[in-house]
Amino acid sequence: MKANRSYLLLLAIVAVGLASCEPKEVENEGPLRNDLLKKTTSPAVIGDRIEFVYALGTLEGTLKTARAEASIPGAVGTGFSRYSWFTNRSNGQDVPVLTASDTITNGAVSTASILDGDNNKALSLRYYYAVPEEARGKTVSFRFSGTSSTGQEVTINSPAYTVSRMDMKRQITLKDAEKCYVSLADMTAYTKEEVEQKGLSGKIDFVYVYRATLGANKYAFGHAMVSLANGTYLSDLNLPASWTKTPTLLDKRVDVKDAQLRGGGFDVYIDDTDLERTTFTNSADFAYNLAADQGAFVRSGDGTYVAYVFVNSVNNTAKTMTVSIKRLQVK
Image 1 (tube, rainbow, N blue to C red):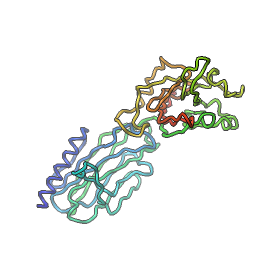
Image 2: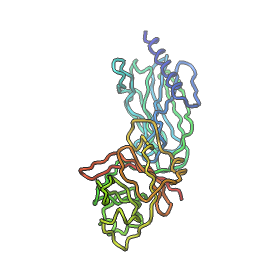
Image 3: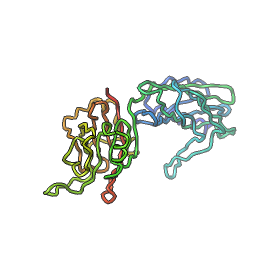
C-alpha cells in the first residue's frame, strides 16, 4: 500500500514538471525522481526573490537530502524552507509540513537534510533565491539534486534566467507639504527642509501635492505629481529661487498595472524593455487626479532615469499618496 501511495506521489512530481512549461535538463533514472517548478512569474529584480518548488520522490528507501547550487551566490535569505506542502482536498489550501531537520546555505550552495521517516518518500520543498546586486543584468541558473537512503542521486538543471537592471522600492508614503519631494536617483521622498539643507533640489524629479480643486472654475485636481519646473501648480509652495528646477516628463497611465508594485492580484509586470521603450509622446510636466491602481511613467530631467510610479493608495483626508517605483538607469 505504501509503495502504491509513493508511486502516485511520484506521478504528481512529473505533473509538476509538465505544468512548469520550462525546458529543463533532467537526469531521472530508476526509482528516485525529481522535477522543478519556478513559481515566480515576475521579473527578477535586485532585492526581490525567485521562488522554486523542488520535487523529489522515491520508490526505494526514503529521501535524505536536497541541494541547490546557483551560478551566482544569492543574497541573505537564499535557501530551502524546512517545510514541504500539500493541498488540502476540502478547501484547496496549501498546508505546510515540517520536512527538513536542517537547512544551510553556504555561498552558492544550499542544502536541506530530510527528516527520517517512511512518510518522506515524496515531497516538494520551496527554494528561495534572493537576487543579489552581483547578478544585475546577468543571467543566473540553478542545479538541483537529491539523494535517497539507498545512495541514489538525481539532478535537474534550470534554464538561465535574466536578472533585471531595474531597481524597485515599494510603499513610499508621500504627504502633502511634508515628505513630498521625490528623487528617482535616491528612490526617496524628502521634506522641503531636507531638500534645502542638503542641497538636493537638482535631484528632485517631482513633488506630490493634493488640491481638491484648482483655479477659478474649481476643476478637480486631486492627488498629483508635479515637476519642480512647473511654477503654476507649485506656486503656493514658495520654493527658493536658488533651487535647481529641472523639467521632468510625466505620462499618466490608468491602464498600466504591475503586480510586484501592487503586491499581487494579477500576473502583469513592468520590465526593463517597457521602461526602455517608453516614448513620452503624451507627456507633460505634471500628472493629476491620480487614483489607486493608476500611475505614471516618469523621465528625469537629465534623462538618466526612466521609472514607473505606481499608486498603491490615496487618502483625501490625510492628503497622502502611497507609491511604489520601478526605475531603470538609461544613460
